[in-house]
Length: 442
Image (cartoon, rainbow, N blue to C red; front, top):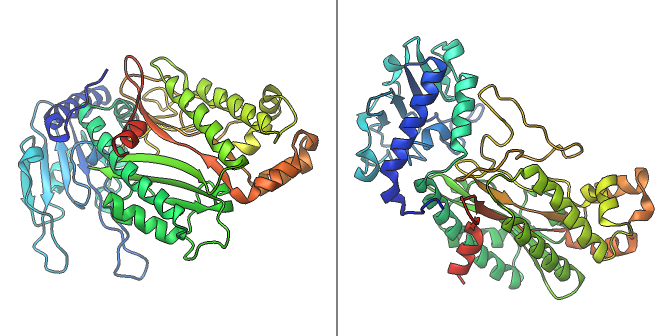
């Protein structure tokens, strides 16, 4: 099992591993160095207000500097990484604080007032430029700018998390679990989606812009909108169900957690219990060497079994999968890699060429097709939804008799069920970061 340590204790070895990875990737692609730009502020059209800043994940993979726009890191094989730490003399906005020794000791740090102080270091013909800042594009780097093979190599390496990264994600999971419990309490009190979201953010201590993604806070039928983006200011007159897909961050690393609740006992509550059971079984099946595509297809069979047992479909689970009926109720993928990005990189590629590992036929939205390896962190999120447009399409074009429409209609106002955990792949049994975090916050 990969050891889980405290964040600061594991950081020095994490930086050393980043150095090793980048040295191998640069050598393989014929580069002498890499200039990694954190990113710049992006302003709205005809406006002086910028969008929330999201740092380049390749920069964040080295440094816990989530708000440090226009900083840059120069990486050279065999040398201490050089950080151009942008620290402007500014009285309009609060500038970054002085570097903290726990991370800064691993770098040569130059505090800079000029956001372009790194430019001369980036001009070498064999220096790769990594990032999307306009300042990088202005250098006319051509093939040096985000070289595809170099980026693919780094993406593949990032799928195996270090002890530092796992410690960050463990803490993100703890924060998310605390906030999920606060959200459930707000739901039980009859609060609106808007107020539930506020209670969530207060509990995890994060601003909206610090969350890994926009929280999905869905009451009743809104739970059937997979990426429901609104937050109604008033609660519905009758509350039936609550689906919340919400995460947290620590040093830029994400937790991505979903829970579903019923307002009262009954058929929908029974569906949640059944889905929770198969979700735990799928999590327990996470092992080194498992093809995630097989796990995704197994999830379809299991969900179809729940549909059949509940009387929502009249055909066998096997027939529901073969005909595509299971996809009407479960139209998304089982999960994805997790890390600095909610949908983390490298889930669909096999090599530096970016060769795509194909999804199973009829499953276009699966985000992870890899064979699992130690150090992978991924989500497991089976779902069962009552999505009007998909159901109507099946009634029109599919085998209408395979669905008990009266039973489906009776549940349509509940939206759907999704249960999502974050799981670490080890050399042995998997570690369910989410369930462990909920247990600690009970």
